[in-house]
Length: 410
View 1: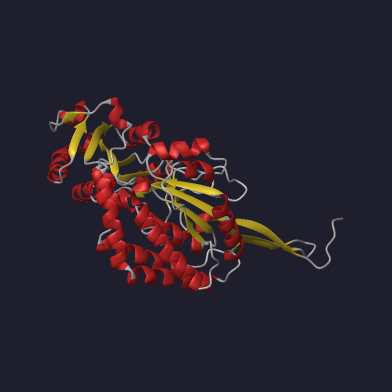
View 2 (view 1 turned 90 degrees about the vertical axis):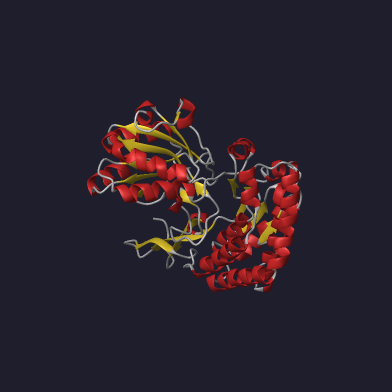
């Protein structure tokens, strides 16, 4: 692990100095290389899937592990989209000339070496490599044991294409063992690795945050809410709730709790019917169940990140009650409002302290691609160093640069 991190550190020193055009060309070459070896990747993934299923891996995790043709195309497209983004390095974010003539600038620079520790989803392998290369950071990947063959092959293909395009060896590397002890070793290398980003279940993230000597960008839960205001357009409300919950139930920005204004109770039967049609189990408070029969919601339901076709529903008395519920039970990930009032929307946006707050939009849109970042290595609910989708710009820091002409401190 030390040798792996040393190689990444050396690569990072070079990578951050390369022109943006070189890094962009490498990303396009990485995408082309993945497309050329499509069948080989699918075969490796099939072997991982067969073993994971035999070992009893849960259904949602199996779904995340599976690489379809659509997912592979997505992975290729993300590399190209990130390549086409503006270069996040060398950007002067602040600058001025002092009365003495000293020119002072604050310029964006890479963080250095990023360790990404994740579970199940092989597309994280390509997203992480894309975001890190674009931002001039070397990346050390450590995927879950259930996807070891797939992830190692993906990383090797991208690393080969990257070095052929002029990036230093070690710019993209991967931990090639399933031994959990490797993660423990990695988390102690604070002199070689600058940031750790975990992406997976709550237990994984808690372990990493507890053990790491390296700063961690993290999120624990995606307890996402949608508030249906009294003036919400009925058709829009139904469409947004169904999409937020059902488009993909096993992801962190899927809807988990629906808040319905007491003045919008007439929408409950239509909402419930649309959700039932998608196979969603509903759990409601007493006021909800007085309108539509369903299972009772308990206190635990308001804290739940189901990652499954289950939705809790609560009636609230106005926008302030919705904000209070989110403050009490939310995870600071993604929360939304459906309303026709700009004043009400602005009040909700100001009052909800989450990484993403959406107005009349599905919670499923709170991601790097939909926000125009091309790709993201995760969604942070922290406030330091990054918040929300972590894309190329979020993996930069800055340094101060001053140009003088023999200036001295008086």
